[in-house]
Length: 250
Image 1 (cartoon, one colour):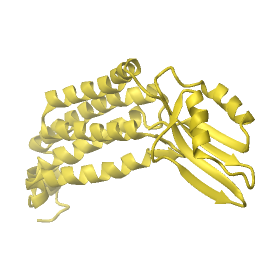
Image 2 (spheres, rainbow, N blue to C red):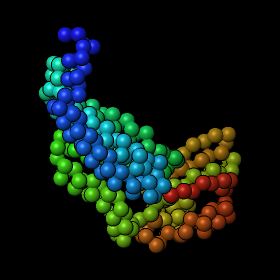
Image 3 (cartoon, helix red, strand yellow):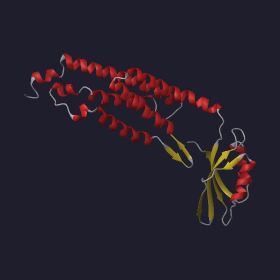
Image 4 (tube, rainbow, N blue to C red):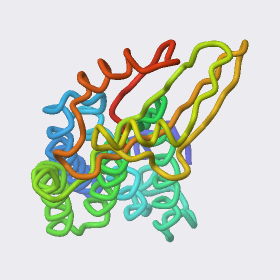
């Protein structure tokens, strides 16, 4: 049959094909709404990935999944259903792999601070919502979207009420020839309500000046000296040429 014949072209607009397209559209629209619901929390908190990113991820995941279930309608119903159409799990595997790369792109590491982990995890959740919409588990997809939004909105407040030990990353650059003493540093931190985290010490030596990097963990939520006061104390500490302190987020 001529692929440009009127009969062949009309098959793409047959009642059955239009019904399939309508079902796919409803799936995509629902996935877009659920993705935007999850992404709003990230946008509200000023994250790089917001409603558009989450909506696109969720909708695209639903699209790739739902078309696998309608392989009999591919190419106007004249195509041979492929093994991919008979096994949608292969589509899902490809989605999971692709979303892994997207999630890795939003994870940022600066010094001892790591950010973007929650955004990466929630993008993965958005793709799972899209897959569930694509295979027809609408109620479960709605529940997952609501639980994901609740997790990001509510658990942060609960986490703030639970006992915690805030951590800060400290980089100390000493004067040339100065011999830093770990015991003295630990005593200094202890006097300010902090302890040096085990296994976090990294020592560099350049042009005769040692540089120490480590994580200081507060003994309790309100035990640690505020960062500004700690910086003022470090300015007066003997042998310290320069320093850098920042919250060690993860």
